[in-house]
Image (tube, rainbow, N blue to C red; front, side, top):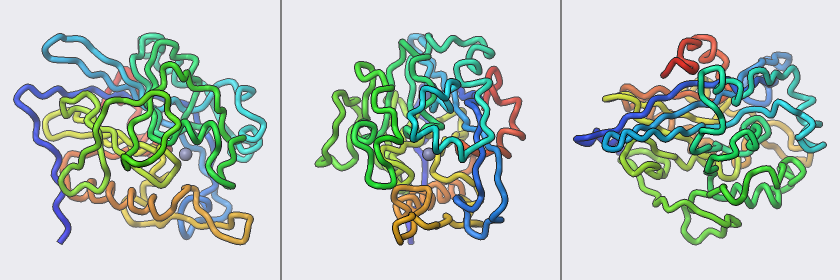
Length: 315
Ligand SMILES: [Zn+2]
């Protein structure tokens, strides 16, 4: 029998974080690319959700602000020609408010954000990094190689803006496989660990059990998720693009496969099998641990039902 999943109990002086949702623009997805048994004509306009996480140290009262994902760029001319061609198939889009506007509306200046964590560097998550001139950027291992060189024929480098992250302030998490090569100039000091019964490796970001970044392979090279302790027995799991439809996490739908244009089939994930493993691990988390709320980036239903939890509201 598989090991039961348990999350670490709170420490004596446990720090909890607060999370606020942020609008980061919207885009339109054809259902048939994402779920099995889709209506071939159905297209849904979905948000690209971003999140503000505030961590206050109980001993120093110092608050560190972290933003998870930056949504869409408000200026589409800053995308490459290949990205713009792709974005033409994702209309309608909106970028008002973008994540910087969403922060300002909630009384927070993007210039004051300490850390930006990107779940991955697809166009609808990378946003406008130059709005965050003082932030440290943290990305999953393999991200900088992907930006510089692309990732195979389905992910040519033209689909990425290789020079848009501030490289002097950008850190990769270390590779999960210590033998893996990385193009990162800077790496964080974290060590990967496992949580009992959880199939994804995690780093304890602040070292106090309040925020874990999870290696969540499959969607794109360097894809990461974030598990945050928001109260006693209350956790939030930010799933990025582990899937684009929560019915997949619940086992009600499967991952759609479609032609790769070269005689084979593909999905929206760079490694469909790995994506299945990640989805399975998150599904187990939802089933076995009480008090965990899972939110994926493009969940329009969640956005509609949770307007009061956008900044200045909290999850
Ligand atoms: Zn993506």
